[in-house]
Image 1 (cartoon, one colour):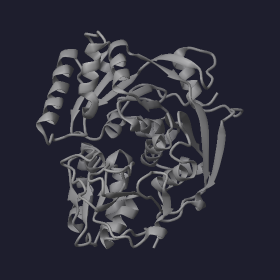
Image 2 (cartoon, helix red, strand yellow):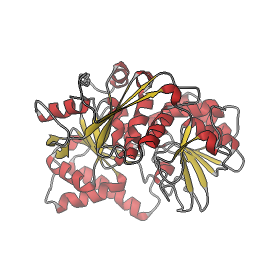
Image 3 (cartoon, helix red, strand yellow):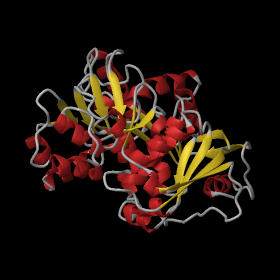
Image 4 (cartoon, helix red, strand yellow):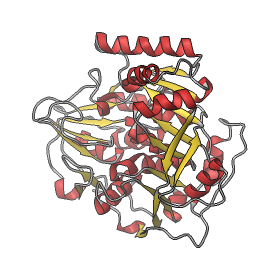
Length: 415
């Protein structure tokens, strides 16, 4: 069996798990963010439940609409607080960061766990050897009430990447290239498993970027084998013993993709689809109105360091706005301690509070106007994702965003 099959087999106490099999499992952690919480609460009561089975396995995160920018959003946040208080849910966070950062940063989950969330990018936690996936609010209401959920076991695609990435090439370029190759439906309801020397060399932060984006290829989840880096990252966060699960050597994957790291280059996903991937050099020189560094994909400390190293001693182009949103409160604080925020401010960046910010098209995040173009480290470039339906979103790495912010035009970090 592969990693996912072994995790699922252990949770269901079955000797063997096969793709396509229907299984019922207890959920180790359920994350709900402010955007969908009120829907989950309504469904919970409509389904006849009155109490959450295990409030210690539920985390409420306000990250999409904080601070609220409308009366409706304030009312939704109030309902979250009231429900949490009534149900004894103590893990509730207001602008402490993006859910897909603080859930692992605060040690709420461990390798081998089954984690669900009302957000498609819940796949992020697969970087820590976790089966994690996004679900709808009706499913979440059932999880509130029963603590369980059924799944169809996904088949698996394996991506083996070996070698050393060239200068200016990062994890975001790797996952965009892969999505460009297989398409936005290339992994529909499948597991995307990553391995190889390049992946082993990646930091945990870079691995989180990979698994965050797998849903953009339609994947049910992403997974990376636990290693010493994973254990080191989690050692002060969890008391639970971490078990390393590896795929068997004779696993039959639906398909295996092999890449040499030297094949990768800085890329962008051009409007309006994540698989519309081109070399940065092919669109270099295109004028931008805004640049965004943040989101659950690339708002971590590693990303801010990369941007600061490029922006240090430079200024953001006069007619371009650079918005930087740290992915969590702790990242924000550490960025201040390291002097990263000073560098970004000196360069002319706007620093916003930890949240989904511009990625979610939040009213307080600096949304785009008609015919405006943004280069962004976020994960989606759908029409109207970040504002006007007549705006354009280009997805890329923090390095490409930083270089582009300086020139006011899309610019490769390899030049």
